Length: 313
Length: 156
Figure 1 (cartoon, chains in turn red, cyan):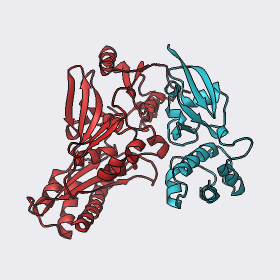
Figure 2: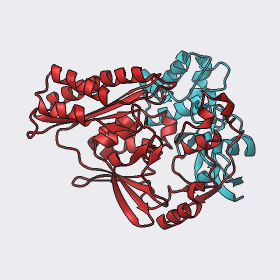
Figure 3: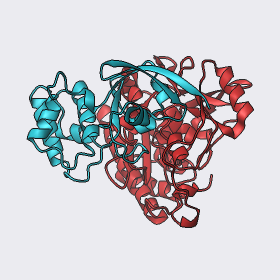
Figure 4: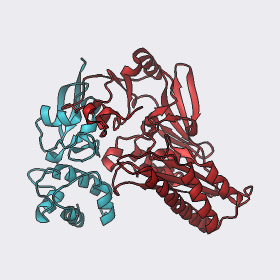
């Protein structure tokens, strides 16, 4: 999607002034998944889902989007439920709020990285409503929960006219603000497998302030002992805000799997992450700054995770 | 255009209202119910001036549709004082000059109320973190944080 007109500071002539309130639309509270698919197929771009509303309502108020129908999917079965199975892992309803997720005992105990990432989003009161499902569906390159989802090998479970589909998060994003959902299809659950034993995770976000601004760069690192790796452990690294979509960095991961982990190895992996970054200039930071910060924050996150692994081991 | 009849509890009393799909909780509170303590600041979920409690949890009222609060319980700044007695937070904001122009104050009070309800003894960092989504352009925050700490100490 091109830069929304209302936010295009380069072209003030196309600035759309926000109206005094939301434009008119019809609110529909869906009770069955099929009802959602039918409405989406019937109305196309004129129908949008409503979960926490923290993104879509802003876009509507700014005049960027004007759907005729908002379909509230929070009341569908399982959409706001969290379940954990020690063998299968975590299943998050797509409309579970970030605060509910962060406070859930299974998330705190088994997936602290998810909580750390969610807490980097905006403010507490926004996170009462904001959802990880919405964060992924919006497919912003800057989505804070996306790097954590990537390194945890999370899967998007969708519902559509042809039934259920399971899409790895790594294949879910298509471009800035674009996901791979088909017409009539919507995200129902996020499944997060049990991470490898002994894992340590970290998400570091650089914003313009310590508050809730969007990320200039976000780096998630997950490390775990692995006797099959030449180095004795493996790392997964994912970046936000430095490419058209959130990305994994296999080049840097390979360096860390194949060479004994020393300060020098960590020092070599960080520039590999920098090399994989393809950022843009925007009002939050220049591409050059983003690249440099990708290296620094990757190094910092690797140091933290490596220190955690040594403590555990 | 669809109108929806909703029933909800606000500051302890039950209300019924007829709202359009695109009415926000904020305009329901301010314009239909006339409770103007809750402020309309940025209208995009960033400034926190419209923060209210929805089923005990703080939300930006500008980012919630009125139709979604059918059956819910809402508390606004007007609901903090009980029987003419200020909430201890309000009392401490008075004593510590935690308010200047007052525009952010209702949202800050609600946010601080929610914080003390879930964490009666917050550290300075926890207070700052909880109030991250409430912008104040006058006080510099120091006295706000002092007031919240004093309220916690007073059993808040």
